[in-house]
Image (cartoon, rainbow, N blue to C red; front, top):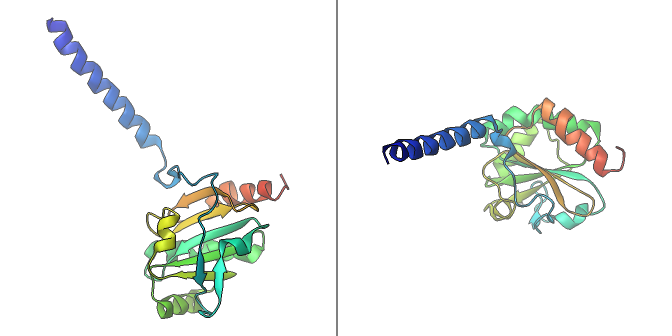
Length: 178
């Protein structure tokens, strides 16, 4: 009886330590998304720089493309911006922005000052489309295939290493150039 009183709590403690140890080895930026391998949520938003025109996920059907969620108030977005600019300049994948919970003028000034990597940016002022995409916070990045299915989600800053090791190989594969 005494052994069971000691043994059971010790086993429970060991199991908890093992679970926590495994959790510490995971990359928090690689949070599994329930949207992976599901159709990208529908949207039809005004363009940031041309509010009289709209952009929809349907406009990108037939192309592998990247959706980058950003905001002028986002410090991490500024950190990843040179990488997104460099990727866009290669022309390997169209980069569409989703300006999230921002003010139009602030977003436009930010792009003018830092450079605009986006083919266009959708203006998601109230953040509803971001919610549909499961945005935790900005920046977040998605790779969407030709059929409009989300194939990759990155939470946080897109680094040159992420572009090299994750995004470019996936884009190449999805375009049939593997």
